[in-house]
Picture: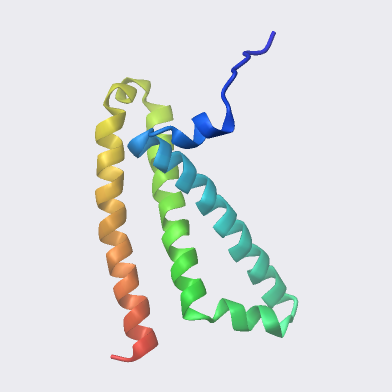
Amino acid sequence: MGLKRNVSLTTALRYKGEGPYLAFILHRIGGVALFIFFSLYILILAGVDSANSIFSNWIFQIIILIFGLFHAINGLRITIMDLSPKMFAHYQKAISIEWVLYALLCGFILFVVLQNRFGG
């Protein structure tokens, strides 16, 4: 017998899950971003020129890098937590470390992409 939950859409949208919930949502968005990235890459390999123009756009690169990087770091945190269940008691610290690592790497990536875009 399945678990039944009576949660309306408005109740779900008001949920303030903070770090873990935001990580959950951004992980899903990152997965979609990586799907778009790989789909465009396959189209480029197939010789579609319009896909190449999208792929070389610096705004597209920033968006894909931001969400793809978060997906990778969050996936690494989830894997580490799954492999050592004793660490689950420290998941808030793990999420905090994830956000700091993400902010540092994301800042560096943004610096490099924008420096290449605007010359330097």
